Image (cartoon, rainbow, N blue to C red; front, side):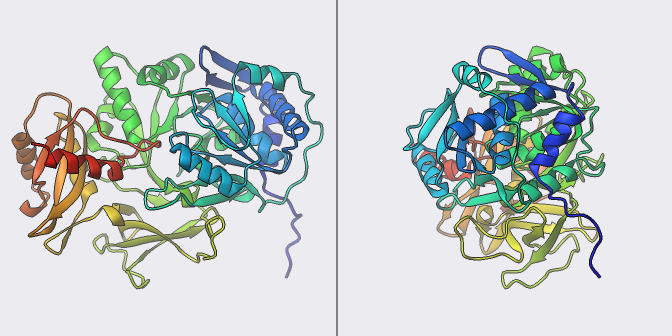
Length: 501
C-alpha cells in the first residue's frame, strides 16, 4: 500500500527556511584577518541570497564551484549559496600540495575557485579572493528573490580524501545526506546540539563539511562561532571565553595545544562544557586534564566516506571513552574478515570495519565500483552491545615476527605518561622480525627513553615484544591538515633519524 504522506524533499533549502523564518535574531561570529564579525542569521541569509545573485551574474549558477578556505562567515555563505543555486561546493583541502589542488579542481571540473588570502595557488580557472573587497562586491548585489526547488539526491558538497595511499578520491554529499546527518547530530544520544548552545567548530570546513556541524548548528538556531584562518591556541581560548562557547569540536591535537596554552598561561575555558574529539583516539591524559576544568569529552569516529561523524561515545568512564562508540542514527556497521565473512561482536575478535547508511558514499566520484558495504580499512573489535573500538588502520598495523602490534594502542599508552605531550609509533624494517616499532615522542617535561620504556612496562598492558625498540625525542610531530598524525611523513623522518649518526 502506498504512503499518503506528501512528497517533501530533504534539502539545504529546508534548513535555510528555518534560518530565515525561525531564528532571524540568532548570531554567527566569525574571526576574520583583522577583526571579528558578528551578525544575525537574518543578515547572514541576506548575504547568502546576494551571493546567489553574484554566482548567477558570473555564470556559476548550478555549476561545480571550489572553495579553498578556512572556517569563516564568507566560507559559510558559500556553504549555502552554491547548493541553493543548484551547484556543488567542492571544499578543497587548504594544505594540499598545489599539484593536488590542480588535480582535484580539474577532476571536479570546477568553474571557479573562491580562496582565502593566505592560500598560495595558481589554478587554471576563474579565481575570487575572499577578502574585504569581495565583501563589498557581495554587499552591492541585489538579494535573489527566488531559489530553485531541488531534488534531495542532487549533489550539494564534495570533498576529496587526503590521498595518503594514492591520488585523492572524490565523494559527493547529497542534499538528503547532509540534511539527515545534520539532523542526527541534534539527537541527545549523539551531540545533542540545541538552540541553547554556543558552538565553535574547529574542524576544518574544507574537510568533510566541518563534520556538518555548521549545518546542524544553523538548523537548530545555535550561536555559531567560526575560528577563522589558521587559529592559534590563544585565538581559540579567547573566542571560547569572550563568546561564551559551550560546545566545541576538533581533533585531539588541537585540544592538546589548547590545554598546554591554558596551563602555561593559567587560563580557564569559560563556559565550555563539552568538547567533541575525532580524527584520532583522544589520549586519556588529555581527557583527564580537561575534566579538571569541568569539560566533558565525547569521542567521535568517521571519515570522508561517511560524511564525518558516524559513531559517538559519550561515556563518563574515561577507560570506556577510548572506544569510538555506537553507530548514530541512519548508520550500520559490520565486522569482516579478509574474505568478507562476518565476524562476531565479542569485544575480542579483530576484523575490518565495514559500514553502510543514509550518509555513506555508494561509490567514489568517477568510480565504477558500487558499494553495498563500504570497507573502511580500519581494524576494529566490536562489543556485544555494538560499541566499536578501532585498533588501528590496516596500513598502520606493525607485523613483528608474524604477530600484529597496534601502533594506536602504544601511542595512547605513551601519551598517558604525565611527562609526555604527544607520541607516534611506526614500524621500521627489521631483518629478523620483519618490522619493529619505533616511537617519536614530544616530551612535556624532562625525561629519558628508558623512563618512557619503564612506564610502558609498568602498565602491564603489553607483552615485552610490543615495547618500541627506540624512543626518539622530537620537538613536534608532522600532522595532516585535519590534525591527524601524518604517518606517511613520520615514516620518512624516522628513516632519516635512524640513518643519522
